[in-house]
Image (cartoon, rainbow, N blue to C red):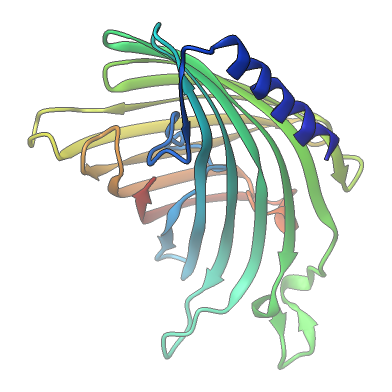
Length: 276
């Protein structure tokens, strides 16, 4: 609660310092779009792994609550993130038992400045994540948890800062996060990140854009480990607005689900996402 008060107080100061600025409540779009290949982004879609009959289902949203724009191309925003990412299995008769689910919610704040064809700024977040096994992870026939993995407590609270630079339809970003509370307690506090995304415009018109996106996250458990995420696909709709993405995904690194946080995972998958 104290952290939320501090962030809100800072935005009040910004409003007072920008008395001539335009102030919007609950604007229709996001000041900073989700970073395409980053695993911790609000998404509305799924990934399907044909080789293991696994399905990732992501349901979430991010909104700007307050936006302040000045006469110099600068935009400040305060928003909220609420989403889940879910691991399911595909079984006969159209059944999809839920194995694991992770919840993330928190506040975000950002600054962006646009100058002609390029823009720069940053997005910050203060968030909570908790992870849980669900009934699909339990083997009722043998009265035991699947793969000998019992439920364990996993949660973390962290702050993240993600500066970015974009030119036309390419965007680069790097980031740092600090975990100020985590269970299990032996997990280290710092993580680093780098990524980019590139949308190829005007090949099939304004509303179909091939794209490639890559993200490298250096997570710190007992030692640093690289999580690699690659997306290649087609965006339907304007590349920098809401739309639909169909894509191929490759991932290699530690599992993104908290109950499997120390398990190495490598896969290829086909996915879709309704872009926010």
